[in-house]
Each structure stands twice: as structure tokens, then as C-alpha cells.
Amino acid sequence: MINRLVEFDSGEIRFAGESIRQLDARTLRRRMGYAIQSIGLFPHWTVRKNIATVPVLLGWPRAQVNERITALLALLNLDAQLLDRYPHQLSGGQQQRIGVARALAADPEVLLMDEPFGALDPVTRGVLQQEMLRIHQLSGRTIVLVTHDIDEALTLADRIVLMDNGEIVQQGRPVELLTQPKNDFVRDFFGRSEMGVRLLSLEQVGNAVRRGEWLPGEPIAAALTLRDALSQFIARRTDKLPVIDDQQRPLGVLHFGDLLQLREDLTCAG
Image 1 (cartoon, rainbow, N blue to C red):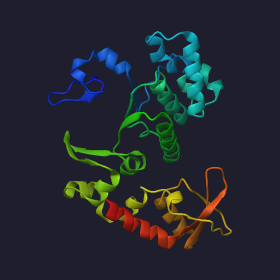
Image 2 (cartoon, rainbow, N blue to C red):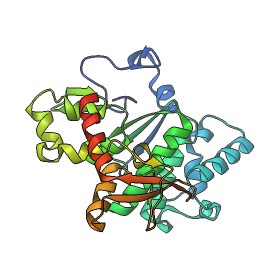
Image 3 (cartoon, rainbow, N blue to C red):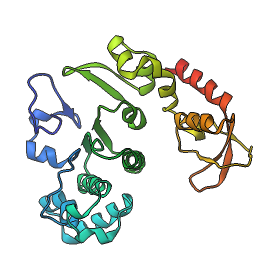
């Protein structure tokens, strides 16, 4: 409905301060990127031509299109050798990255994503979720992502809008929905028995590490969530874990007791 591929019956959707009904539908869609679960790459077009779809429609000069394609390949960690291949010659993860590249090609004001990772295996899905967090941080663009995966929503979202039968049940920051559920539907949706560990998924290890400390052993990454760290504590049967930053440098030590305290702090903050 946001890009008017489906018209809504009542209410109002505003984009950049204007009601979308007042905007030309074709112009509106070209101001938005769109990525879907089935990816929707044109099978008879090369990767290069797929990525260039919207810039070409907008009449960009060829040099500008090629420059944008090069930038997107770097952003999404894609090999330039893929440009002359066709979609069927790519892996599922590569196809999804190309779909995201196409959605971002014209530097849209908003990126719409409808179950973009639903058809991928868990490992590839997790990698691409982290890629989207990085892309969001670098681009600063608003991303509207539809998902039925609770953990995916908690991992990616700044704000969550929970819907049931076409109506908004509750919206807010993830910690607010977890700690202040509006009703039993919200409480059950997020899982009453899993509320504690899901709270831990909202914070990264780097936010709880004791800097300046160190101990031997296999380190964990600061970018992991505290929920991931909890799994490591249990698997290794320890109460302390060494932590490294994204440059593989020693950062400090995560203490199990601090993890529990931060969970309490998150509950109070909500």
C-alpha cells in the first residue's frame, strides 16, 4: 500500500509530508526501493541490467549508472564478475543481494522490504540481516520491512508496528513491546516464556564488556547480541568471555553477572 501497488480502502498514508493519494503513482514508486521474498529479478536480464533498472527508467547517463553499480557492489560485498551473469547462475544469497542492490540503485528515499529473507537458509539469512544493519547505518535511509519472524524484527528494527487482522495492535521501540505489552495478544506474540532472552537480543556484547580486562581463550565478537553471548556462556560452561572488536583487536571481558544486570536495566528502561 505504501507504494500504491495496492490501494487502501480508508485512512491515510503520508510520505515526505504528503498524502500518497495526492502523488502520481509512477513518480511515487520511483522514489522508493522495493525488495521482496521471491526477489523478482528479471531472469532474461544480466545482473548489471537488473541493478540498473530504475536509474535507466529515470534517464540517468550511462556513466552515472555504471558509477552507481560499482558503488553498490562495494556496499554489498559483491564481486564485479557477477555483473554479466544471469539470476539462475547465482546462489540464493547472491540473488537477494542483487535484489537489494536494485532496490537501492536510484538512491530511494525509502526502502520497502517484504519478507526479503524468508526463503533463505538460516545461515544466509543471518548474514544478510547483519548486512542490512550495516547498510542502514551507512545510508541513513528509512527501511520499512515486513516480517513474521519475531527475532528478525527484534534484530533489525528501531521501531516495531505489530498488526493483527489489518489493524495496528501496538507500536514502539522493541524494548517497549517486550516490557510493556498492550494486551495478551502482544504478550503471546513475543512469547511469555522467552521474554528474558529476547530482551538480551536488543543489546550488543560491546555495550556490556569490561574494557581493559583480558583473559585467554577463544574470543567472541563485540557485535554479537547478548542473547548470542548467553548461548556461549552455557556452551563453554564459564562465567567470563574475552571479547574482540570488528578489527579483531582485544576489547575486554564480558561477565555473566553483567549480562544479567543489563537485562534488568533494559526491563526498567522499557
